[in-house]
Amino acid sequence: MNHAIYEQVKDLISLQTGNMPTTVDEMLGFYEIKNNQRQLLSLSLTNYTYHKQAAHGMTYIKSLTFDFDNEEICQLNDLFTPGANYVQRISELVELQIIQRDIPLLGEFTGIRPDQDFYIADKSLVIYFQLYEITPYVVGLPMFPISVFDLVDIIDEQSPLSRMAVNN
Image 1 (tube, rainbow, N blue to C red):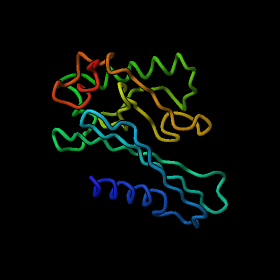
Image 2 (image 1 turned 180 degrees about the horizontal axis):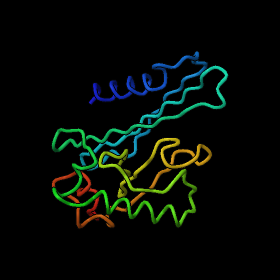
Image 3 (image 1 turned 135 degrees about the vertical axis):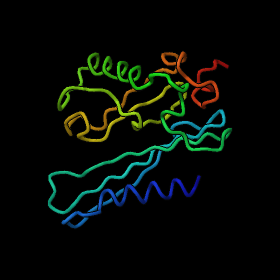
Image 4 (image 1 turned 120 degrees about the horizontal axis):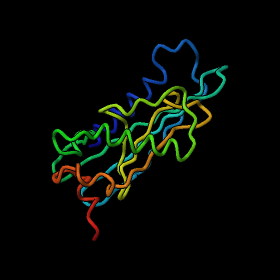
């Protein structure tokens, strides 16, 4: 677990500094525990970097979700039953929130990627996008909480998301 966190932080730093022709004036790193219950740890790692004479700084977030029962790092597809069209279901739920929340887009929303960034927070699967991925910078990092109860029919019973869908 510690090694995975270390590697993810290194990747974020590299993303901010690799192949950049400018000097870094400021770099800040943060983490947030999003969930630490029911044998599941989900956390987000944030890196903000400002390059000399840039118009503004850049922020990236990456998350890690550890399933202690299965002793693995979860990918988005690990949360759903094999063959379930989770990409379409989640894309529809995200698109509905985009409309309801009147979120401005850079182009047409075509859906999430099968490996979309996510974390688990209590009884929600939170899908998020990086800056400029689907929205203008002014929107920030768009995050879309989806209740596990909206996905319960496609959640793999062995996945940690299934544990979050239990009311106890």
